[in-house]
Image 1 (cartoon, helix red, strand yellow):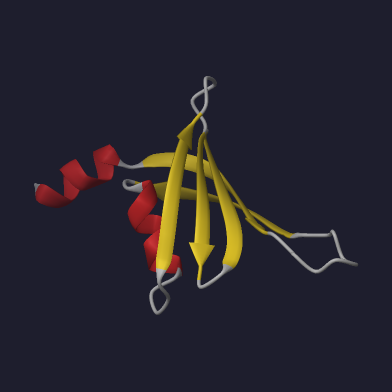
Image 2 (tube, rainbow, N blue to C red; image 1 turned 135 degrees about the horizontal axis):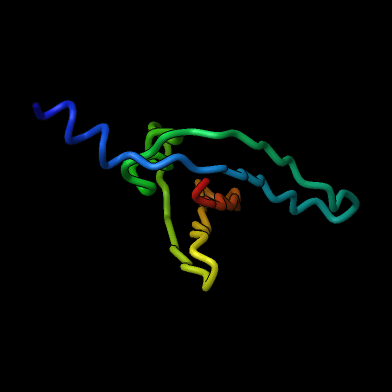
Length: 84
């Protein structure tokens, strides 16, 4: 019964993960796309960076998307979650 409730709480998201490049001569960024079922957005991010200190800032957009600005030991990253 518990497993069924947990499954019902999961939502499907398109996740855009950007790793920002701060090198002066390289303005390109690494961008990754995936579709995943998630029940806790913050826990999803923390699970991707298990062995690092992670600082998170959440931004909720009017269209329902959620952006997390992430700092992992000085490396800036951004996760954008859009419900499918």
